[in-house]
Amino acid sequence: MSSSNAAYTNKEVLHRYMQLPTHGNVQCMYIWIDGTGEGLRCKTRTVDFEPKAPEELPVWNYDGSSTGQAEGSNSDMYLHPVALFDDPFRLRPNKLVLCETYKYDKRPAETNFRLSCRKVMDRAKDEHPWFGMEQEYTLLNQDGHPFGWPQRGYPGPQGPYYCGVGADKVYGRDILEAHYRACLYAGVTISGTNAEVMPAQWEFQVGPCEGIEMGDHLWIARFLLHRVCEDFGVVASLDPKPMPGDWNGAGCHTNYSTFAMREENGIRHIESAIEKLAKQHKRHIMLYDPNDGQDNARRLTGHHETSSINDFSAGVANRGASIRIPRQVGEEKKGYFEDRRPASNCDPYRVTEAIVRTTILDDWEEEACGYDDDY
Picture 1 (cartoon, one colour):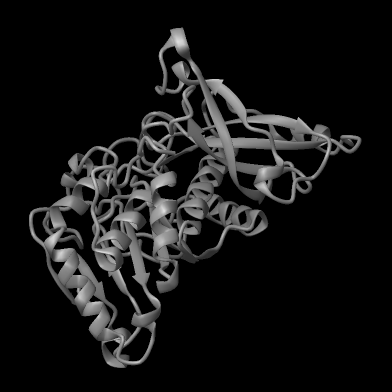
Picture 2 (cartoon, rainbow, N blue to C red):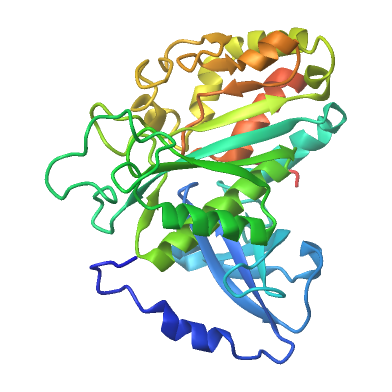
């Protein structure tokens, strides 16, 4: 795939260098969430062994003043490795290292929502909360124009693009397939992909994952998406409404169940959870995008397969509801439900923590979905 941007390089030249031996050294790419709560940053460290667990790797530091997380006069931030994945770009034994971020005084950074989420998942572990998140994204040229769209004007109306086949129906399948394989190689629990309703829009699904692993795996899958797109010279946008007008937005629908919901007559536990979610609708909306619901307000209009951001609703097989119970679940009286409210740019740690707090723990504290001072 070509790009008109002058910064795009010939990857065949790189391939020669990637074959060179490293004499027992291993490259570990540390990955973290920056001060926006959406962006990912990374840098690489050489070690002389292949790590088998994140705690084998050293804590590292970075310049928080360049990531929106610290002042220049006191800029050191710290990276604590928390999860390991195989590196599909440099190949084994090289690693991707997901990290939590901490300040100079050992407090977690404001966008380190993993700490709070992990504590909640530990408290709820006996319920075995399972998640599957459906990540929608839009491919853009580097000038911000949707990939494959006419330079002037628009493609035909929505209809033929969802799960479509053919050069006039889908744009950028190469990227989808490359990302899919990269996730499988890395060890991400990716369960599927499809073309979405708007042209140049795609989706991948991560899960089922239990507890904290949901956020870990989705963040790494996002990193891999951006990294694959870098190779192709295009941009992956997680904007919840990338194109104004009569076009679908982008969400991160979250499928959820507990052990009790998956057992016989689990539907009563599903219905109980939905009742609890209804009472906390506004709180969840504030947590379902990084800008306190403002991004989702552009998407959750009651049109284009969404519910209104101001209303809570639930229904069987209803994609215009806040919560959808799949028809099969309604017939079998057990299984899971889908929360359709999270935006495509949500933080999965905040989303999964909120769902567990509301449906299992029934416990909301001041430091919920954020950080506390006693760590």
